[in-house]
Amino acid sequence: MTEDKVHTEEKAAGNDSLLGGARALLEDGQTLLAAEIEFQKARAGFVLGRAKGILVLAALALVLLFFALMALVMGLLLALAPLLGPWGALAVVVLGLLALTGLSVLGVVRRIGAISRALRGKDGAA
Image (cartoon, rainbow, N blue to C red):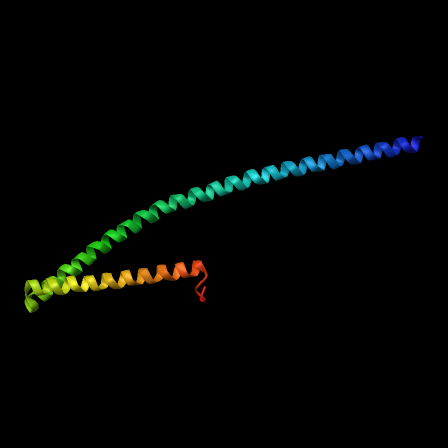
């Protein structure tokens, strides 16, 4: 009878220690999850803070590029005007810009076609 009582007490103590270990593991997991969430929030805040500055600098770069291209067009018009006359210079510059625009559009169309072929599975290079 005493052996049964000792065995029952050992079994109860083992269950308590197992339950306590499971509780400790669950608490550690919750603490780890909370710390990970806070870390990811901090990372996202850092990235968003830096992204604002990047977007401002990118917008400034695009505006400056636009003005540089306008200066190039005006320079070409002024440089070609004595050689071809004002209307000839205008025609050459406009035709040159239209040719570059056409090449850009052709490149866009080809790339879109390649993407659509790859998505449909008809492109062997994918």
